[in-house]
Image (cartoon, rainbow, N blue to C red; front, side, top):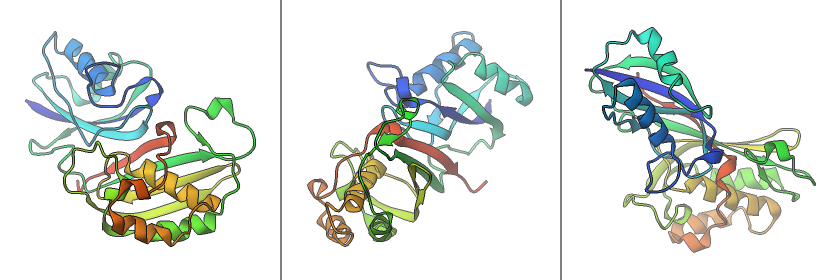
Length: 247
């Protein structure tokens, strides 16, 4: 058996998230169905770095699987791509050590969230940008974001539906970058809770709009109360950008 490590990108517009669900189309199901074809009907399970929610995209999701097939490594890319739909793209495939695990070996992850500003929505970006037509102060958002850096209990910034008991996470960096008519939020951390980035973005946008003070974030964090934080920004503006490992 060989352990294969794969990096993919996908357009989340028509997926009900990454993880297999009882109903709805998922990225995991499409990949496992494709691998089943390559393995002549045998079930092959994949293990991903983590899940993404409905409408969320990925530029660098990573998963691994074990295979008995003796396909040369250089042919795996085309072999897998031919059995996947057009909204999943294979970026890289390598052979990994037997003890590599796509989830448990993660060192850090980077997510990016994109917001379109202005008076009119660009319909050609509507599946990939959150349209937010309000005047906002980036300076105030940066001040608020700085309070989230480091290690904290992020109970206030995660979905009540999360299955994680330990809600302590470390955020290494938050950058807010202004483009012509867009804002780009970059988050790097050791891991993120369900909806955590989307709630952080929604809260920061409320700070930028003047609906809350940048210093309020300290009280929101310490409260460990989801109701104290801002709205959950929609999923379609979020991208899993990169997953980092030690090797």
